[in-house]
Image (tube, rainbow, N blue to C red; front, side):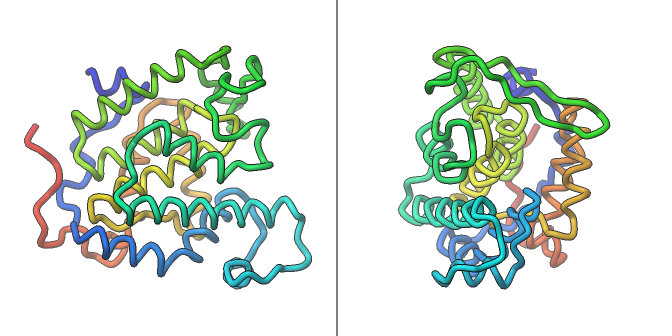
Length: 264
C-alpha cells in the first residue's frame, strides 16, 4: 500500500475512530491555551523530567524554581516556548505539515539539549552520527543512517507528508504523523516531542482538540511505543492516541459531528 510504504509502518485503518468531534479552530486553540500548563507538564513527565505541575505553572508565570538541574528547567522552558509558537501558528493560520514548521518547532524544543537542533540529521555540522532509540531490555531501534545533506530523510519526509495528505483524514493524519516522526528520527533529539506538536497542529487546525498523554499513562505509552518500534505495527498506538483525546476520556468521542474518515 502506497501510504504504508511511504511512512515505513502500517496499522489497521478500521481501528481509527470514524466519528471525531469537530469544533471551531478558535475553540480548539482556546482549550489548548487554557490547558497549556498540563500539556507542558505531561510532556515533561514522558521525558522523565522531575518538575511538578505547580512548578511548571510557576515557571509559566515567569518565576524561577529552585532545587532542579538547569537542564531540567530548560527542557520545560523549551516546551513552553515551542507550545506558544505552535499555538500562534495555528491561530494565525500559519500551521502546515511542512519542513519549515517541523524544524522551527524542533529548534525550540531541543535547543541546548540535542547535538544539533532545528535541522534534519546530516544537514548541519554533524554528518555521520546516527542516534538510536533505546528500548530497554529489547535493545535499540536504529533509524536510517545520518548522511551528509540528509537527502534520504528529506525524500522520506516529502513522500510521507504527501501520502498522509492525500489518503488520511485529519485525525488519522495527525496521529500517523506523530508516529512517522518518532520512527524516522529526523532530528538528533526531541523527535517525539516535536512530532506531537505537529500532531496537535494538524488537529487544532481542523477544529479538533489537541491530545496530551496523561501522566498516569506514561508507562503504558512507553511500552506501546517500544512494541511499535519493534514491529512497525502502529495499530495499538493509533488506538491509544485516540483514547487520550479529551473527548474520548469524557465519553464524547462519538459526538454529533460527522466522521472525518472518507469511504474506503
